[in-house]
Amino acid sequence: MIRIGLGKDLHRLVEGRPFILGGVTIPAEKGELGHSDGDVLCHAIIDALLGAAGLGDIGEFFPPSSPQWKDAYSLELLKQSAEQVYQKGWKIINIDCVITCESPKLLPFRQAIRDSLAGALQIPADRIFIKGKTNERIDAIGAGMAVEALAVCLLEHVQH
Image (cartoon, rainbow, N blue to C red):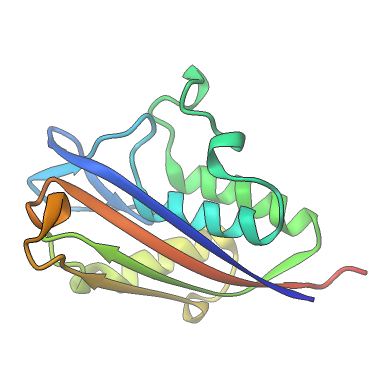
């Protein structure tokens, strides 16, 4: 059996916070505002994985109302989520992601992000792809006020 999962996250960008994608801190004037470290990419992938495995969503596993998750390192949350997926007998076939922001440019950091995610998920980096897009200066993302991540994953059930 195979299943796909889709995840999406969006965070405001504010001064004084680090800009983190897939566990990689990228030099930028603004960073994600969030209860955790605000890593929109990890959050979108978590939702994609949990959804495909039929386990729920990020808000159920790591509620933003809980002080336990305040300033949490999202790459660690991703590791924990992947462990839940693996325990249910699922294997990650691939993950494909789109990050939309006006700046910074993501291409110079793409391989580092892929490697970081691969380490957290314990899969080869060539099973993960990251694309950076702009919003052509349209809406809050285009004005540099927000960043959005979309992730889709394909899982295969390997335990019978």
